[in-house]
Image (tube, rainbow over all chains, first blue to last red; front, side):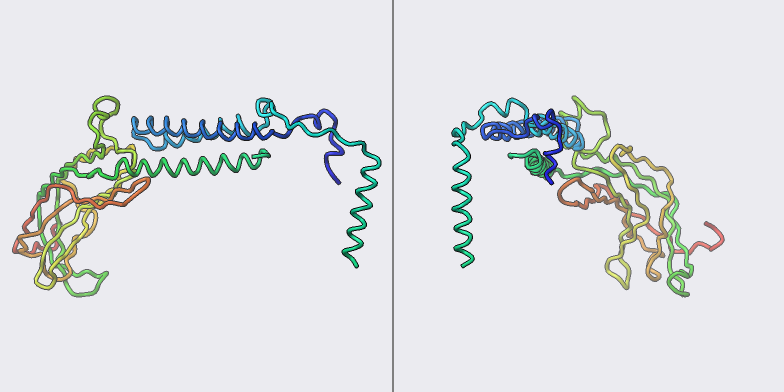
Length: 109
Length: 194
């Protein structure tokens, strides 16, 4: 069912995540961009007395911050989480499944 | 913030908030403007007729005819240094979309304390010429009186008012500075003359 299984290897390798530090960075980044465009737009709109200019400049800021922070660029993936090493698998899987099934059977009773 | 969609949502919501803030600031920046302007009104020929208004009934009402001159320059830029340094003449401030101007007559009759009749109006949109100079203009709407109060009425005041339609904020109604008093003749004009 999962579409991932049918995708070619090259596409599967494209990173889709941001790490936590990257997410914080991205949020700060778009806030800074949009607010600075808003300030510039306000000043420019006041100078030429056209509120539409202010809106266009703000929308430009929106588009730029979308381009910079929507895709998970590599600058947002510099602090990956260090996971613990995977434990040896075979027995673990066996034990967990048995315990889970035991719990389920208890619930049924 | 962990997927592109949730980031898009956050950025969009943030942009909308900033937009609302900017709009409010725009409203604040023009809130204390007075929007006043001088108006010069003059009239040429003034006559009154007594004719039936068939749209209302069969009895005869007074119908005034006025030919007027009107000069005004409605500029809503209350910021002189901007005007002299950057901007061309004759533009609105950034919180004005359009103006609705109307010329109205105000008078008192025996039956009614206050009568107001709009006899002419005009819409000026942003970017259009806001310097008005009319000579011998005819009224746009009929100057009907509600009865027979116009003949030999010596105190009919013409004034120009306007609504300011803003981008954000209040919808002020402003009366121009400068009125003109007209006196209707004490004889009805015969119907065959316009």
